Length: 207
Image (cartoon, rainbow, N blue to C red; front, top):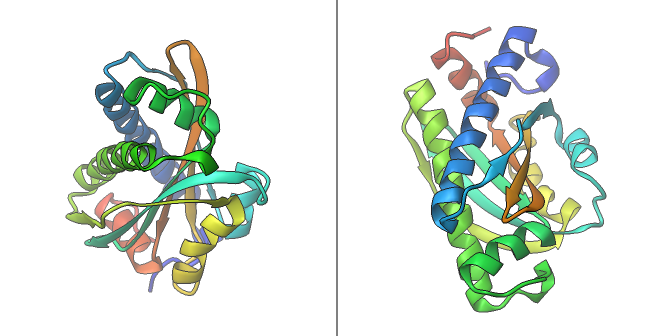
């Protein structure tokens, strides 16, 4: 039977999942540095396990306008990966890739959307590759979908699709420095209940 709620996880399992967050985040930061051709400063990420409602509280105001790149996962691991970013992150990335600065998520051009989607695709792919390598899994990714909406609305997408099979989210808060500008983004790894148990089993931390 799959683990449905994060309260069902043992302390050792929580630490293992946080370690996955750390390693995956490092891979994503390396990918971002490669895309931008810049040295990226990165703090140690903050990794927290939570349910859907707690995850929104951890990230911030649900009414806040946010950009989100949604990737659906399948294969040996079912679920979603959600990469959230605010205007400072988008502006710092787009200033390097397109020369545009001070870009707000609701003012994205087609070129901006394409650039951010590609960044999200590569960062997400690097993160998932780290998880797959650690667990010896084959994880397939969908084409990324970029959405700009209130935070609560964006998180409602995986909540509607996955809350019936599980209520565990790995929230990874990342702080980057790009050209001396400090920005942050969040990565949410949202597994189905069966996939969470399978992942822990592959990592030698089954219930």
